[in-house]
Image (cartoon, rainbow, N blue to C red):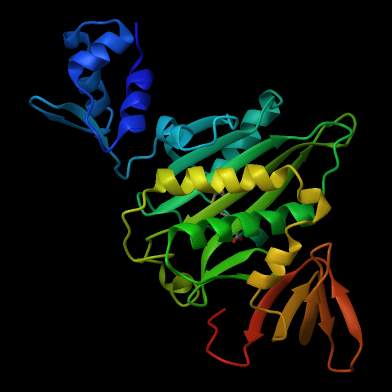
Length: 328
Ligand code: BTN
């Protein structure tokens, strides 16, 4: 008996064309009535399936998040485990709980329509309203001998997100070190990578890469309104499409990220090179001009004294652009 998912996949495959009830019935070896009931089930689950007399059924994309739809747009060889939730405290927290029960065996992606306690770096909240944003975490098992570089993983993720947004939307996307993604000089994406260690060996066993995208979110709380922005104000590109593209970019880049092969792209997208910045690294505050971002992802900063310093972790708190206004 054909599952809902198989019939949905078939309709997605032929969309925007119709597929007749007869053809579906023959293909799946069930009656037209059984097809019709399955279509009703899909509609009840939130999929838009149009039916037209004499033509059959057709799938129309909508804003509902769906693991089947996300999977259908991934390359055939990419089959991460996909979990879509209507709501969760935090997709990162969800994956942390999951991996503390049982180790991951394959890349596992958790996506939620909304988060009630989404969080970012330095204990900050991540505003996660329903329907307008993308909140997902990618859990990756790390084998004992596998090289793992948190700095490069974070920068390669920023490149994957930026490439995705630049490919799907007519916007100019820039990166603010380390991994803030900006459109119109407003932060539209936050990335938070967390590593989990095996208690006995102390080695990293799982890495969780959390990505939050303000796709069309505009109603930010007051304290965020000046700095945060949306990728676009409206779009016909669905969140499922964005997620599929993002996972494709991310999982492709993940194969070679430890080589730093994406750093050329990272530098090209960076909006801080040759700009004056104020930054915090640990307990220190620095001001200087960014001369480069090196192959490990570290910022190469020329201090007012002329001395050049590498900064491998921290946060840029202010960018003094040579041109334009920056709100960060
Ligand atoms: C930051 O900018 O400080 C990072 C924000 C990261 C937010 C994402 S949304 C999906 C995942 N779940 C979370 O709770 N956080 C990350």
